[in-house]
Image (cartoon, rainbow, N blue to C red; front, side):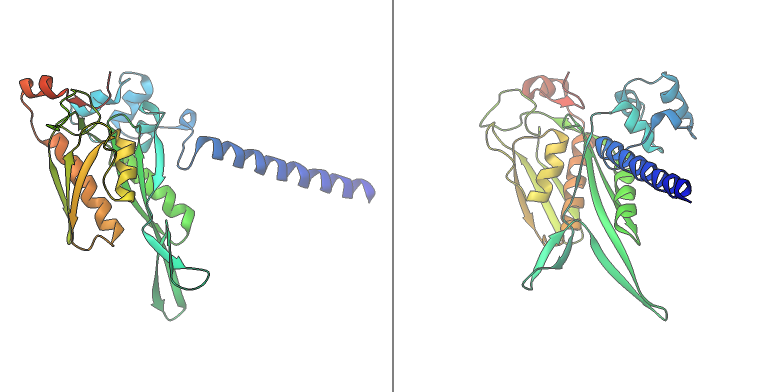
Length: 263
């Protein structure tokens, strides 16, 4: 009997230790991280990336290929950072509201209330690449993981430069020209700013611009900007215009425009 009890105690201790080690590994990798050794690609692009035929993510954007597997971004951009947007609200200690990263909604059914959590994630390497994703689930952690995976699939490459007439330093610290974005009633305008101006924009949009590698901008907003989800989508829509607009070669040299990484 004593030996059996000792075996059970030792087995429980070993199980607890393995769980703690797995949690520590997950914290080091970060949320949404994937073990690429066990990755079996399902698309032609994924197979080329794992085989080493595509070693730079710029090759994917140059050929206008679609990323359908989040592991492609993990393999080609291993130094990405993740941030969650404050899109929800919870009760404060003494009443009132407190901003949270989860937007909770409920569905009334005969069985009772069925809650659903929505998270908005941002991903970027602080050097010309940024992505936005939205995920919903009945629990908080699955919604976060869905949002991070969607952000990797929605990764875009942006142009940076110095389009401010006050600076003209030809450095990629700002944006090369004014861009506009909209979502719902929100209208957002992002304008170039001289070096040292910092990010003169709403705090949640600052997270996106920092992950994209932009340091100085001016902004102007109107509409229901309290709805953070619409505001962050409008900011992402504005950054997309930096890629869609064609720029003349003389303008590229004059304002030091860089697309993607600053080599």
